[in-house]
Length: 326
Image (tube, rainbow, N blue to C red; front, side):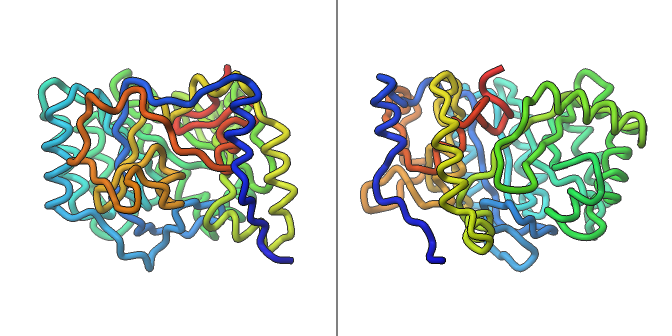
């Protein structure tokens, strides 16, 4: 069947029906995608990341981002990819940000298996030494589901990595935060985050002695590689309708696009990581880079939306920090 293309922005219509506006507030998080190279090729990946990708943020772009960040009081830098640690400037970026004044908090969105890649043998110790918060992908506590989504052998590598991180204090030391991420293994919306977290906590502790801080449930977005999966399996229209039917107006106030500024590997600015992958940038006909933006002019800016936004407002909502409505 042909790909389903919705030319009408039903999300904007739904906001209007509920008398809601989606405007940017104060920026609390600068989220930086430092490249698309990854040691895994996950079926749900909205970045289309993988081992063959070569896009990577250069040192010059990193320095321009750092110079802009230093002029603000944005407290959190959220580094993503791909596997962000595979960018050769990753450690330079972390060290520069953690030494800034006022102090900034660094989050690394890590697939955990990258800890065992060649040249990364001391990565876990580096992250701990710099008190980097980790958001580690683990789509299930069973090997079968994880490997269906992420590939053969990934589950056992992930367990080894989490044990290593626990041994360094992650999940047990107040200054070393380890959060896990659940993505559905199919075309459905995540269940209740609190219930899944309790199950993860019991299963991982009972079977492997692993502890962690929190579990984040994140809805799979109908774009890029997951959209290709939906199209291939004939579920594209059904999944989009599922997300639309599950729209929760209470989620809009807490959407990540309101306080997170997304920056691509070349420095372009977007409202969120998903808009970034769809090339829905801020410029009108031309790319607008972070260093072209006055941070004081960001609050109040109207957020660009599309039908993919139903993924963030379905059920309990979805963000880089998990469910929006608790």
